[in-house]
Length: 280
Image (cartoon, rainbow, N blue to C red; front, side):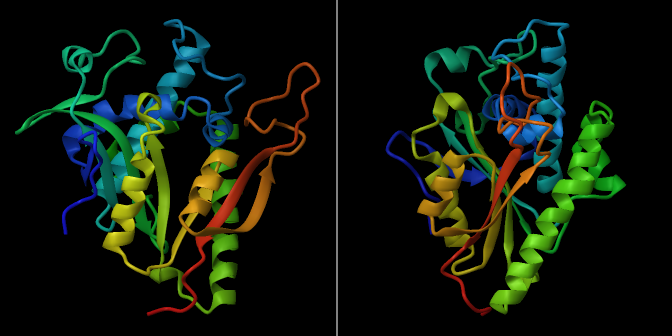
């Protein structure tokens, strides 16, 4: 079966090693304001779209890019990982502006392929739900280790001691209640779309590719915004639990409150595709 495609020439293909670096700039742009990434990175304020070089914001932007580069690479190099990208023909301006300038915040994420040039627009990363992206070899091979040394103690504690155990507890409990085996499920680690390409149906392309690859398979994910939560609900995912992390410490944006903002915590919606009721 041919991979999903769109009228604008966009199509889904497998991620390649050559995509990892240029894709990381698009991914950082996509998650620049994401509450979960702010929370993981212990970011103190929203990262501006074009931070000044040498500033704290620039450091946070580069830390985010390295984290996304490492996460995507760890999925790519994992023996059971699957990563798809949406590509389209670049505009004339994008094709001429493929090089890094300054921080690279405006890097067009264009790659050269046998057929010419492609703009990397979106990416989805999947892993069997009983597998993890850990271990020294995978961290070194993917470059994920770079982001470890840029996070402070708070960021590591939030990911390792709060987020990861919560995910495991919620999904194990849910699958036991449904009589399913978590080992048979697919976990959507991350899906992202470059802001310039949002609203074009590229998330649908990526999700349809997954549904075609694993028809009827149980799938799990966490949504980090009301918008993404509603998008996943459109694809048949149901909320099984909602958790607000770091109540009293951060706002819904994942950053410390200012000027009387409510520190309601960073919310994640844990979701399972609802049409699956038994293992096959």
